[in-house]
Image: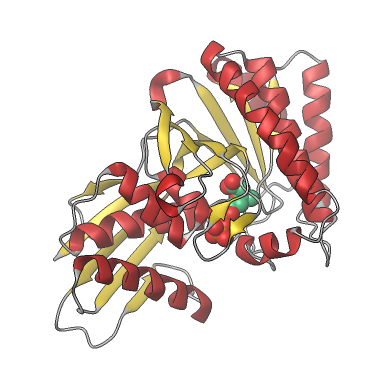
Length: 326
Ligand code: DP6
């Protein structure tokens, strides 16, 4: 059977950086995110006896051996659950550059999990889908539910799942993604997280993040943007402090990244309510309420040498579509 799914990337407001169980991808801490409507992956999966091996293509991009191996491993998980031995053809398309800290592994594994499980004849509940997606890439579990999502850390695989805290229309937040570089990062999130444990701040970050979670949930519940934004920035800097003090050090920022951070501080002083967050890459997510998008964009447009600007609204989670890629 052939199935196609679309899944959004997501931006974490409370980030996942470090696993307490690598094989099961159990995170050290719960995380909270928002799905992004303009950054998504579309994936078509077909299981059929005409295929003599699994194939995986990303339209317009090169697939590395490592990526192919990771996708095959995920397909094996699904074949096992469906009790089938058929091979597949998988074709994906990203609306944005992969491996640049823009969570292509999140949208990629969320879309693959939904399309492949449906194509294999499985009908999982959302919670089960998030658990399965998590095994492919941790952050992918947050791309399955709608809108604003929490991934519960859990101590076992069944306890570590994601669910929607609020639907996408709950709060008109915008994520203005300023692309500083679309080049693939040299150290991916999985490798980077392994290194994080050497940071002297690793354990301290987890302790502090556990304190931020109830606070950000309160800010979300009250739609209190300044408090929300302060927590988002704090959490981002905690993660990057761990990255920078890993061994070897992981420094994802470029000069432009720092220029944008400093601009955000200045824009706030000038009265524009905008905050930043950055994932495992140099690109900066500017978080604001939609009423302030015009003001933020006016400032962003004054900057030079930016590769791209993608304005995201909160999005629904992974879903099936009828138009296949092949
Ligand atoms: C910085 O989910 O890509 O984006 O589970 O090893 O695939 P793996 O890691 P991944 O890590 C995401 C890291 C992050 C923060 C976040 O999205 O929470």
